Image (tube, rainbow, N blue to C red; front, side):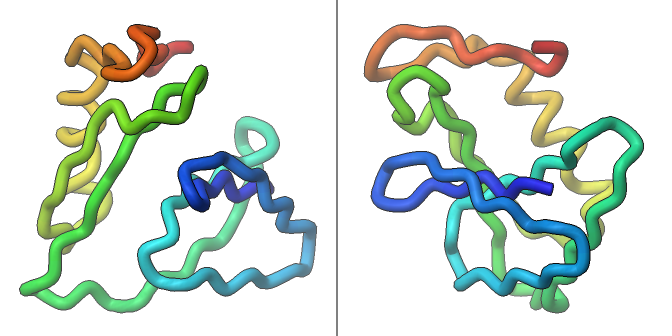
Length: 107
């Protein structure tokens, strides 16, 4: 699997090979990507405190400016995340820096 990260405003891919374990620091912008449909990757996270919000960000694939950010209190990933993604995918997704329209869900 590949962990896509954004460090110092620049994207980077971190490969995680079969049998490997990767620990990442808090607040690292990241997006785990499975190598192929149906593959399995295990992500273990700490228990989310009820009074702490998570942030979700989407970036322009052309210039890596932040296109959208939402902060939300997540207690149930399966229940709480789909509405956030649906809202983003229904938005304009226009990059404020370069004007590129970030691809939607099916892209």
